Length: 433
Image (cartoon, helix red, strand yellow):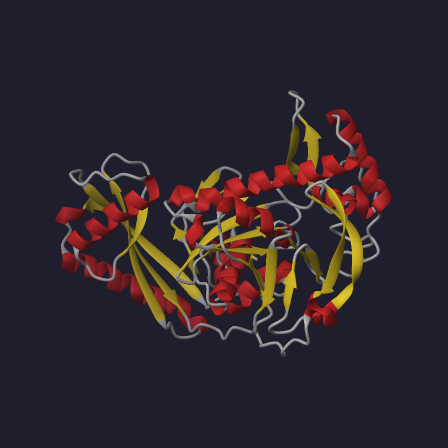
């Protein structure tokens, strides 16, 4: 998997390894785009909450946004990358008290070994997963992912100790941990939407990863999203992203000059040469079926560029597109300033693999998937909550919250006032009732 989306052969990856640095988050983003598009909602804000972090990305017209620069640990690398904003908030994130006496969550993680206290492997620090167990959102009688037993006693012990330091009972402390984690995730979702000039109210919220569906309800309400999508098997959606990604290659050449003085014929020639190179590199994995031409532009004096889609070698049209992209990203333009052309780029993509999703059979009513009830704490209230088996739900089934939908790789919490409908592909489409 490439950081910018798409796949390429192992031998080519070995020579161009820098293109794989963000391959995992990219696979999740492209998997989310495939699911959202298939469900009929190609514009969405997606977040992948796993064990150590949460990755947020914006999906438009069925594709994630792609930029020309990425970074890992604050270190930049100038290759095409899927635009993903990551925060240290995951199931293993450690909850702690800072020097001012405030509750904090992450970015440090308990990892997988020893992991959260509830794993029973000697972990002694409270984590988000421990809070799930204390609140009843995860059932200790059901092994995590079908293989890892959970232990309520150690989770209660570490949450109680943290709560004592904060003057909170265990239940309120556990809920506080989740609210702090959600605040960090919400901030990340706003980075990829509001800070990009996009109103979240016009987008669906797609929650995936092992922990994401437990937080979709409150995050959708905070952002104003009228619909949440929880795909089938959300814990392994990144693997689906790898399967649906076409073979692709990105090539670029630096061409620093005043855009207004650029010769259209010379620009066309530069693109044509890059297309030939891209097709040659892609030939090992099939003929290219789609060519995308872009240029990187900036105002003279800026130290950063914006990628602009440019199907034709028209400097005037490219300048207008750059002004519009700059307004969308930064909220202002300088129409009188000189626009510089920095890089010329071509992306070649092979045929799109068929989406490996099958329709599910019609449902027999949600009660057919009812596995029982368990005590949970939601919004400070103890209550009995119905638990539904995800695999037992069929097309057309509907569930009213509060309820829990449990699957082998992820658990979904449906809040009071929400209703989840199951579509033909097995997605939970969750709206305010």
